[in-house]
Length: 570
Ligand code: ARG
Image (cartoon, rainbow, N blue to C red; front, side, top):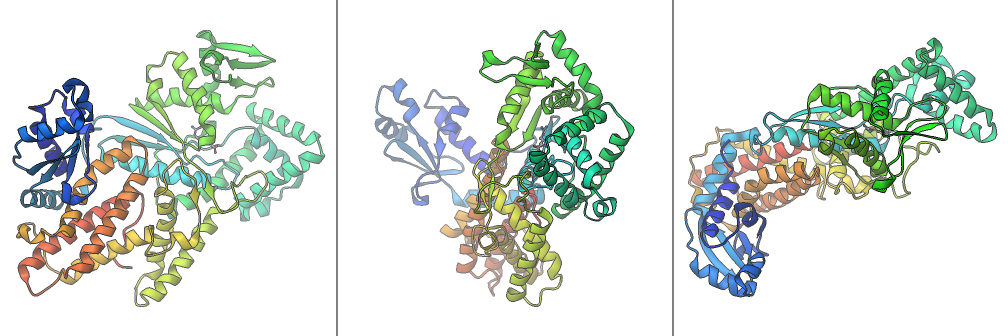
């Protein structure tokens, strides 16, 4: 695939520099940054890494080197500033290069083929059956979805797996609770809510009545033994919960390639345990089977409890082996909250001990909590927010705002859904992954803030300009009419998009894209507020319309990468 405009420019800088310095292209690229102001130039090369070899101060090196360098092709000016060498691109060449690239690639702008022929598996969302789909799972869902989309942009085949929490001791508790207090009719009407209140009730009652825990363990044992009644209830709970989760995935328009959850691996667990034993790593400890990981400074990994039941970790070990055999992945990413860091350390370590060379292709991508101003929410105590209600509320609030702003809008409900849901998604993804997400309606629905609605609104605004223009957009325009600082700023941002996608994927950090979109909106709105796009002057109009088309395309693609909709009108 041809390199992007921005790559062509950095390649050029590398070419210019490598004749004079003993650094390889990667080292040169790593030393390239952006000067503090656009007047100083577009790229800055810091001479710090050369100090040792040249036995001079970086400032002296920068001075000397600058004298030896000659601008060519896309580079117009090379100047020295302190320890830096600043490169200014030739706008006359750069602007057409960028805009023609965006124009010809359209929606595929930002894609590349570094991942061609490779597969990544992304394990994300993975809610627990019979528990409400919580905000933590929402984070995993939107981050994981965006990571899938980012990797697809890089040419990877991406397999999204929903590792449903559909097995484990909680089912013993649920069955026990259902047997005591459950009503079939209620459960059918509001499955997750009812199952959840059974779960909460179980924990409250178990405080008073010790025998309940025993009852639950007994039911889970029966379940693991495949006894009919236990299996029947489990299957039913699973099915009705999944149906409810499906509604949330539909709202978000998210799809999975596989719903193989924890129960899927049941038949493989005995073999997995045998494998660990045969490799000589399993060890009995107070009746339980563990892998001692002390020499790695990690607490032991529990494979089987003393009552014979298997565990979360065992299922993850079996799942990883199964997935490698099935998908031959080059990388597997687990998008799971930071509180499970230790679990993944243990699982990855056991797989490494078993000698799987792909164990180092496993990545845990953790994330912070969602805060509603009153701390983390726990499923056991019952102070949980039901996600569907959160979405409904977002849509209602958005609909009111749109009603005021644009009473004439035709499919208001649909647009409000796209924007309301998008506001929640963007609020999550614009926060750096490891930071806690702050959940405030006012903030995330502010159409002028650093929000999803703001980006979507900007997209709709440029769409409307193109509708008004009403003619075919073309890329043979007079590019010298786009030479103002504001326009150049937009062009430069547009040129950065492919690199932004790459960085976001490499760092598993969709916030890189979200932040970029906010910058692009800001620069584009500034351009739009300052210049009339559609005017009497045909030549200027044609040039500005091309710029608008490119902005719209990149904003639309960026929203898509985040898993959001791009409404044409709003
Ligand atoms: N169901 C788990 C939970 O809610 C998350 C599963 C993550 N994926 C995995 N392969 N362990 O805590």
